[in-house]
Length: 260
Image (tube, rainbow, N blue to C red; front, side, top):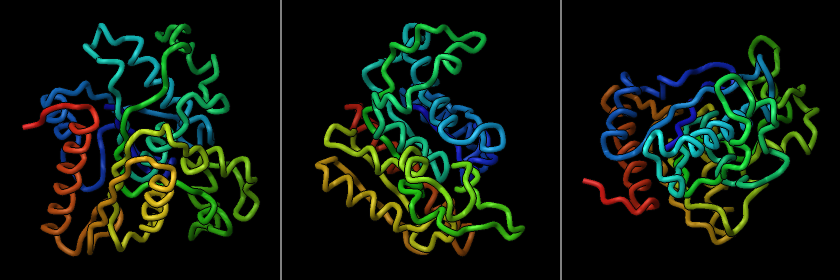
């Protein structure tokens, strides 16, 4: 299971997700359930804009497959998981299997400690669980700015000013652009009052998946905002536990595991 953290492509780290107080503990519990779990870093917008981040995520998956004997990985069963910006990357990974334009360049695959021959490894996954993700950048980059007047996070990620993003840049980062019938099953979870990423992103993507004949489950959680933040700590906890429980059950199903 490859987990990709969020943070608007400008921040975040491998040990954090939403309102969870101990995200490494959550990942450790998933590992104890029988998964090899990797939480990956990737280049943020200030270091390198799109497509650098998806190159890094794909390189991570290829490297893990190349080390399958070392880590006890079944290379035929891989799943991606992420929230927000990490959800965008985890979804893009799942829909762009084998897409040449998003293949990691050799420089990415040849960093110290990484063997160049990992380029032959597959970048496909067999399932994807996405929390409050971005799947189509078209409605996000038309004229959005931050309160400071700087480009909003999606524009910074695509390296273009509001209203001037090219169709090619938008397409390259949008999972919906690569959809076809061969894509793996998806689980999409989103709060219905999300003020950071509209729930319509998940609703529209679920509809697009089903239109292509791809299995898709959509769980819209009432009364919670981005990161499953509710009106009370109890509501936040309930939504977060609902999401992680559903996600693990989904991964058990798509990998043919028998969960507890």
